[in-house]
Image 1: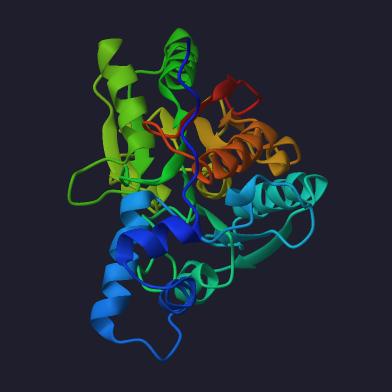
Image 2: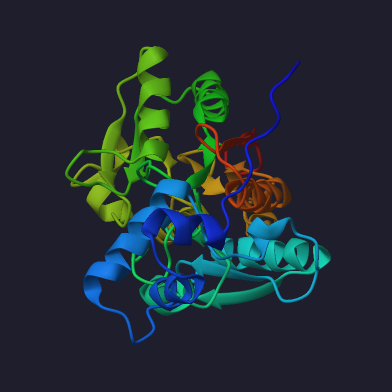
Length: 315
């Protein structure tokens, strides 16, 4: 006979393990006055041990009203973040969830006022321990894996290979990859393109994402790159502008690829080739992980959503 699924811990379980009353557990978890530091830490330790979070998500999702999701979003001047936030808001609304959206610097306030947090910020999310033990946190495309957090990973390897094959088939031999360079070198997205070019026998140049065409071409514009893989679509639009200003033709002189699949890419001239991703699938995966993390946990909570390459006029 199959063993039954593990039961989610309750406030009674936390009180029993910590050796205190339910009222004391409530005061400790919500960082309320009237409790000393040693008792609070004992309660928090018990909550961590039992993987308990006082969340309406964790009580079976029975009542549709009153569940609140915190949504941390990066730079909203980038349409990519706005498109994803809009998708999360729509899908969460269909589930009857309330959504509070904030910038990454507001995490401390958000953690104490929500039942779970979804973050898409471009940086790792650190949740304060006090007042939010075992708060379900889902990170979308995080730069690093964070133990205990759910994550939606973006799979770019195949789409990057498809883009590279497309470029090489059109004669590209001097590509440059614009990337967000850090102490460890390329980001995950930049590394996917670099490895795809190397596997095909071409060594790409790598430059900072904000490099101008003058920076890339140097004193010999004719010997400059014949293809630019931009860090994202916004940088791709900037590259298209720089090339036009320099009197170069796209794609005849230089081919350009972006990453993100912004809808706006269909309306620029030339239309931008890009690595796109289904944002509805991304948002749905994140919300499903919120539910998964709110119950008994077993192993990593991960979903993988692939990019795909879309060839347009710029290549």
